[in-house]
Image (cartoon, rainbow, N blue to C red):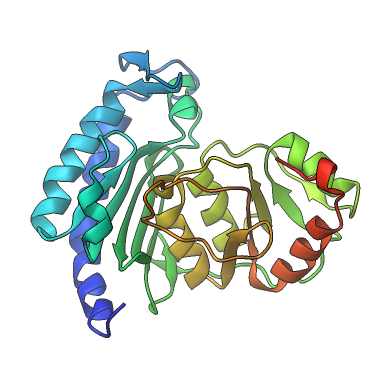
Amino acid sequence: MSASTLPLAADLLKAAGESCLEAGAIALDLFRPGEKTAARTWSKSGGSPVTEADIGVDTFLRIRLSELLPEAAWLSEETVDDAQRLSRRFVWVVDPIDGTRAYIGGSPDWAVCVALLDEGAPVLGIVHAPACAATYTAVIGGGARRNGETIRSSALGKLAGARIAGPKPMLDALARVQPFEPVGRIPSLALRLTRIADGTIDAGLISPDARDWDLAAADLVLREAGGRLSGGDGTPVAYNRPAPVHGMLVASAGALAAPLLDALAQLHPQAQPG
């Protein structure tokens, strides 16, 4: 990552943010709070759902973001992967609707996610949750914001009393080692991370098989808010690899990272979450 990244990312943030707001409006038009979406819905080859809103937002953002930085490659949940991204310095990483199942069912916990990678590292991140009236933004070295206001992750440094979100089997396994306060499921991985960033919760566990587009934007928001995302063994998260798939991940406020990873390390291998 070069020294020129910060001004580039800062210059792009306003226009990219406006594009995310417009994209959110496209999705919101077919969203029905508490009811099934008005969007046409079908299943992808792997069985996961997709809607016409996912495709509409993806198409809109690809046009807009490609205009902002034409030399950047593209990686999105709803676009066929192109290996040319592996040789590009810049890559847009997009999840048009993170939390599609929530969107379909009328839950507000879904978000439009956009990240810009520079040599594999997120340098710009936007997580726009229109049904929650929340927009999280970050530029590397520039702090994190929610609706324009600076945010910080909690200062909690122990698991006792920590508010932790994640899949129930993972939380149950962790509870055998250390008591904490489990919180309700947050279906969008990006919102799980940004709610750690703004102090709503203290930590989150993520089961294997998350993708770059689920994480990259929110990872930067969390990091700039003083939090941390890593593998279950504490290894950093790497982006723009040939297969953009991740194993078990752990996200937390900065001071909570070490005790949380220590607690996970105490789990017997066959009892390990995920």
